[in-house]
Image (cartoon, rainbow, N blue to C red; front, side, top):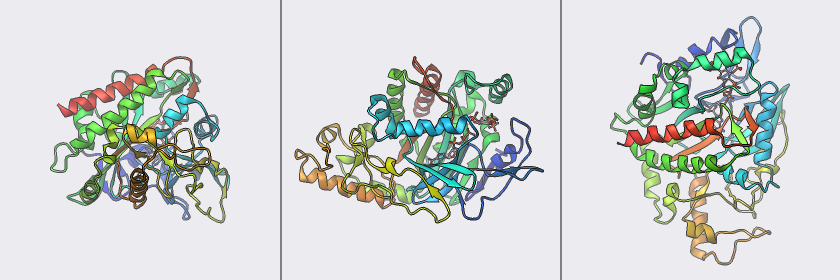
Length: 406
Ligand SMILES: Nc1ncnc2c1ncn2[C@@H]1O[C@H](COP(=O)(O)OP(=O)(O)OP(=O)(O)O)[C@@H](O)[C@H]1O
Ligand SMILES: O=P(O)(O)O[C@@H]1[C@H](O)[C@H](O)[C@@H](OP(=O)(O)O)[C@H](OP(=O)(O)O)[C@H]1O
């Protein structure tokens, strides 16, 4: 495909197509300000660019280091809507069962960061901890405009990708590590938009899992389906929120050596994680998860959300956003009481295994071969019904993945 680019970070294909936006601004890719690192694993969304003749800087995703990224707050009302969603989702006092159940599917939120006039969301980097992350962004829903959209916005969104009305999801970008060339191949907006509905399985999802190569990761599909079914279960019952134009960000390890290392660490009980309930364990004794020093010239707000939540039983180790998963039986036993001490019905073996497991994760080898998170909440609205729009796309996606396994 002509729009593919192979590189170690720069997405030439999407950059080219990005030049023309919906509002006919001419955008020229620009480097990030020197003090910021561009997030090399960004596959979709807004990127660093400026409007021609205006020098107005558009901000892309920033690699903030220490396992975190910055996402600039979009213009109102989008940015503030997204911020409000994260604040609600990670409110330490949150006792909303639906939200607590959704949390493991969200990138942990660490407050905001200001730089000059720009404000950013500080989020866990969902690709850190992977040696060679393979990343795909799937924008969900057959309708991608919200109730406040202007006729022009509706027209733009509807015309963008006609197969969407039947498919219910679209690939907005992906990067796939090629072990033969030892480089990441980037598939940008124009490649993805040109994928016909009948090719989305073979040339989109199939390609992402390298199905027709000797490095096929077909094995990652069943655990992905299993995680997506958990999300489906959530969407089948929750009636509080509708997620317009949110994405699923799926990441798996593309490096064969990392796969092997992860395999060698197999622990019979713990490594059933993809089929078992995911539980993020929080060691309250360590309290702050990420005591990251803010750069001197930036202003940081709220670190409270770094703390753990006893309801969902979070243990996170420094620099890791990976949830630890255990068998249901172990999960039942691993409870934290108010003071953060571990409950006495947990055996010493389970405690030490959990700690070793957390250490392994902290040591940056991805323990979960494939991870799925929900991102982009600029169009999340209160609802009083099931989110049929998102659910339709999610169920279609699951069925496309099942087709790949046949
Ligand atoms: N927490 C994260 N960790 C790692 N990568 C991320 C994270 N959040 C976003 N990204 C990367 O940045 C891209 C854009 O993210 P997002 O969809 O939130 O931005 P956006 O600019 O609002 O997108 P859009 O233009 O579709 O509205 C994603 O495709 C993904 O590659
Ligand atoms: O890929 P393209 O063609 O650049 O399309 C953009 C993309 O769909 C963004 O998700 C959308 O932002 P929202 O999801 O926040 O609506 C943006 O809307 P905008 O043009 O209204 O900013 C679109 O332009």
